[in-house]
Image (cartoon, rainbow, N blue to C red; front, side, top):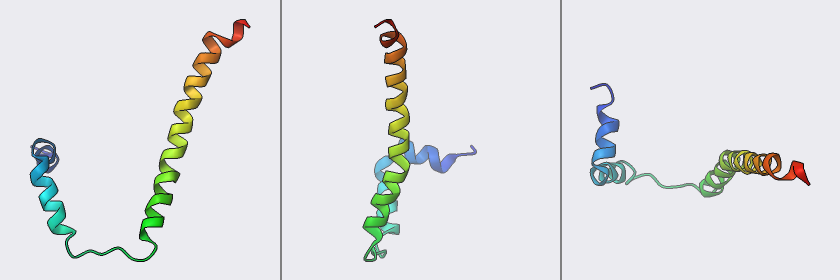
Length: 68
């Protein structure tokens, strides 16, 4: 099978989590790594959430707002 590792990760999440913890055991975060991860998450998720909310707002306006 082409994606055997990915399928195993989905089928056995406990084993995949254990392997991940073993790999990350010796890795420590630097001083500003947490801030960098939070900023990166905002840069990824905020535009996506704005697009979804904008889509809902446009649909609501299209179905209900035009008739007022």
